[in-house]
Length: 485
Image 1 (cartoon, rainbow, N blue to C red):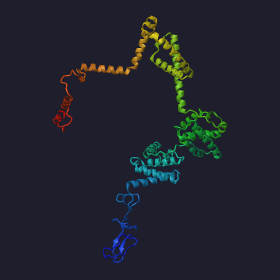
Image 2: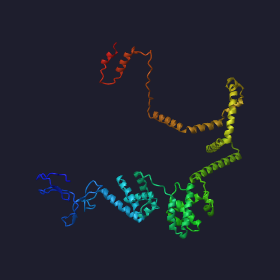
Image 3: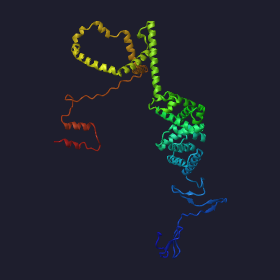
Image 4: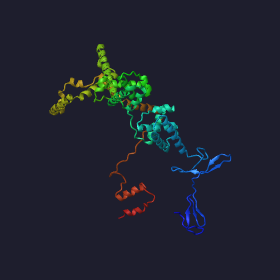
């Protein structure tokens, strides 16, 4: 039904819609309403004779009309954001087609690119970096076998630039559901490229088992998945009598040869690394090895401890041969000796037998202490102590020197600060700068001996108001009536 029911010209009620968006009166043929939106395409000419399309187009997700026929030109240009989205989608689809990715992964990457444009992530960055990062995010979510270096090789750019853009994109868009890469997904890709022929499936099974074994031995954490997969495929090839060099693995896995060698060295130190091919295929090891970093640091600590102990023993033997005393040991030797003693003390305290013996000894010592406390608390009993025994508690000159040097070393920072302060004061006195110490005003407590002490609380309140004015809007003279009886 049309909005109008009565014609304003002939007052007729016969009003119809002609189907083109126009409302007319059939009695007087007056056009009451007409639609400004048309679906016909009309053309016109410029002054130069070139043809153009008239009208404008408004999309469902646009805020302004877009002139048709203008393309990206200045006079009839699209919105800048729409232009960026169109170019980004085109580049994503081209890159996905070059990498032989399915269309749905390109659609997912296009949605990530739209979010990046919404967050103004594209501004100030090269579009090919952002496009590659969005497509790599989609590949990671779908767990494909594509690596970041594949995008860098195709675009002829630095892989580190794409990696930095990818990390920033994940942080800005708060993408949290990105699964970790399992090295086993690269096994089939590497095996096909290395051309094992009919033995490809057997090599892949051995490589997958090696990847699982490395995962139990903490060889995946903190390592590049391509390096772990490359090392496993190399070992699996040797297990099946295929001569594949490290150079071929490096060419396929796109990692350094040193990375492959490190993974092999770490696997050699595990329990599975010492098994034969038949034992590895026939047995299932349930035990787990320590992480390589923990083992390496532990070995380094043990080596350093043995080295310190050996040096200390050599110096002691040398001192005995030369006839020197233990007091002639320098400070470095004292520090090394303290470290060794501390480590030995920790190991002794953690020993269960020592704890049991010390617990029994404490009970005996407590009974003896209670029995002998009365004897030692009597000051007159000190006369029974021998002079040689008292002299043994006193430090000699050499011991006093060592203890003084030790105290000076502990309080080195404080002594240096005091010395700098003293030198500064002497320099100020020579320059004629004398700074008097600041005297702090001390308020004496008020008691009954204080002069002019108020006799009543009312006088005390008045004195306080006279001493400190709280506000200018208070009539202090009127407050005298508050204290009258």
